[in-house]
Image (cartoon, rainbow, N blue to C red):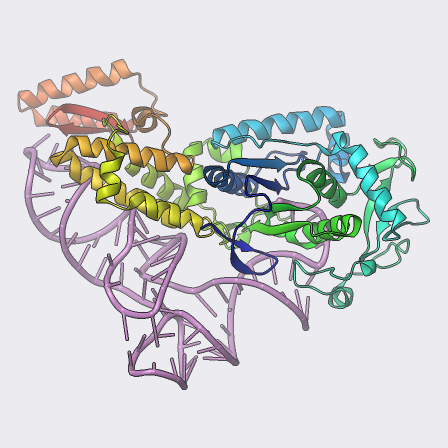
Length: 462
RNA sequence: GGCUGGGUAGCAAAGCGGUUAUGCAGGGGCCUGCAAAGCCUUUUAGACCGGUUCGACUCCGGUCCCAGCCUCCA
């Protein structure tokens, strides 16, 4: 049975959806004013794995991941760039979709945008104002009154008095309490705005997720996730808004993905130590990036470095090497399950709070078994290969043709390489090993490794 | 200061109160003209100090160190 670590209870809990036929999951997506970095990649990849796994266990899963396409940083960036908000956000939404594709990420079922959800946002703020939980300040901004919500802090384990004591000096005296947060923000002249009962303005960041999640998944749904840095204050505020407005539990299971670190430090926009996905894709293919992300458990820190990325590349190359040339039959999977328990253990690993490092280690066990069986029972090796590809598919890896993966990124043409191989094999047959080795070294200088076997000579990229 | 996590072999990364994690790297071997790949074998662990236990890397307490949140951030 699937167990998920719930940030609310800080324990692993058996997962049972509100409706056993239909799981609802909401993930906080991107604020689209820049390219996605590796931290975003991790959240994107992990929730891709999570939803793939959920879809194998439940008849229907609705995966909602929002796009924040209006906020202060977007306005600022658009002015800096001298482009319109729409131009800016559309450009980066497109870039995000390209990055996702490169990482093998399946699109969410619904991808709502804040600017297209204004009615839901108005309705929610209105409810909160009517209930006296929200109020309009002198400036016209509408705030959420945190003291009116008794459970404030239950997700992040904070309480209002501690927060108050540690709070930095808040210059806004417009708020009743320094910890109150904005639901509706009045527009300055020239700023984009929407008409509302409180005046022309735009929504605060937190309210959009409350409004969009309820709109698509109902007031009470199964899973809500995002990066670890969103748990406070973003998710805390979402709980306050949604439960304050709807008088029912908001989310059963909260999931938070750990940070990507650089030199033991969080990768973040503010520190400026981030690498964009497309930057990294110049040196490593998307599948290697994906493998790198899966090689550590989603709640642990993931240290970003060339050495770790190289390691990932070697590892996935090893997996592809073992299935190279096999026909990947799926016919005799029964035989495999009778003889070996790989698939059970693989599923059990993912059921245990999505333990991808364990799942991957099982992939390597299969890979090794394939290499052994190749010499003895080629049909069984093919069946195992089929299993490896199928299980890999549940993680979104190993879906490429092994030949393509192992030969990608090479500069020379196939014809040139084949000619060199012929030349070398001629030299070998004449026992001219000096020439033979020279040709091999030339090819290696182009990043090509030759492998001689009884069937002939094959090659792969370094 | 308050609140979270975490410290595992050369590197990365898991599970587990007693039995091989796994990948890369290193040593030895098989195979090869030589390699590569693969297979066999092998060396490096559990921050520190106590406690519980027949037995702890695994449970409990303390110490030290690291990271994160408390301000926008995935």
